[in-house]
Image (cartoon, rainbow, N blue to C red; front, side, top):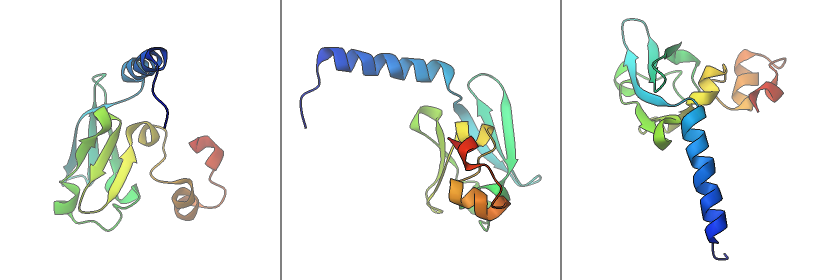
Length: 117
């Protein structure tokens, strides 16, 4: 692997700063037992929730397992260690509750996998 130039480093920092400023990120996340929803508080001040049973890897999880949700990657993702499950905040907001294969299997083969990109 070659050495990173200062220009490459500076460009990577600029891309990172841009992503932090414009991509949706979680400030907090929790599982609400009363509604069965995973609730995400975004850094923008908005809140998003979805039924936990829709998320890949969360379908058969117990309430105790769902409550262990962690914020990952500077708020870009959610992680459940015991379930080995990861979901991206950006994907969830776009209606992607898992991989393209999972979405096609779960929601039908007519699910538009190109919309997931």
